[in-house]
Length: 387
Image (cartoon, rainbow, N blue to C red; front, top):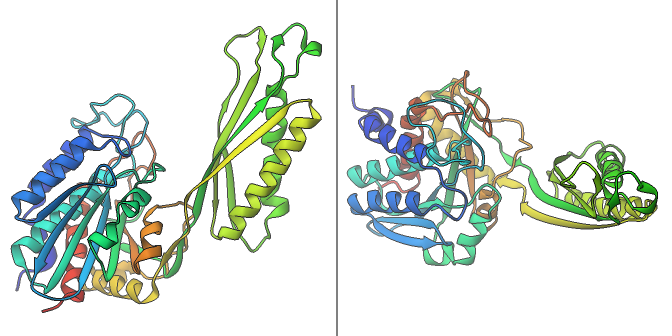
């Protein structure tokens, strides 16, 4: 039988696994991926691929040309999360408070494997741009690359991305036509009162008490202001106030995230958050200042490119192992900003049914998934840039 794309990708398994585990052991936060970026750039250079460093601060773009023809972009993210790893793996994080808990080490490795495959085979005609993006986890990496004229410098007729999916078996794929992921915002609410002794609250204005009431009231926005047919999630994930047991602090802070599938819904949540926080704080004699930052827009898969990517996946693993109508996810992804500029699609790849969820201290990317990601990236290139 002739060698398949996956068979060829498996030739690189040991080399890519070693690379992935090295990246896993040395995680770096968004826009600080200096070591990771240099390792990626060095590997691309070894393959004879044209390398561009420092795109969007720590981003890397590799350019592989094979004659005249269309161009395609393939994108992977490189950054880690600010959390402690609890896997006890031999290659667990060596950097305190840093962990690859979302599989970006795997995404980077799969794209690098696709670069190796395509540099070896050159079974395409046109240009492939390998986009290694920094700062996906809320650090604005996609916008930084776009501000650095990513698509003006490296034109793409289409662009494709991939993310691992815990709970989905290795060798399976899932994709959502159209609206695929929610937008997201981060917020901070600073409540300013009047500090004092905890034994004399009557001469103070307690910002912690106001914060409790604001936090409870914010949950009414989704249930009472957002239309039932729309979707929004508001989560308070941070609360800070005071340093001593016997002191009523001067300020208290709430922080968290909002997710929504529509920009209009996000604006509605912001307006009601500011109204509630200001008025509730005033009721306690305090003041509230709200900072609301939209860090992800909704991710929209182009219908034609979604079908192309799903067809490529089905060609690799069979139609039964591709979910072409995966429900939209409330998670967010800043690849959405790139898809606003260039049509394309974003697909999920199985990370195993026993995988811990992403953003969990026990998470680990499944190395068995690497050949499938390499093969899909390579196959979509060979299909779109067919000789």
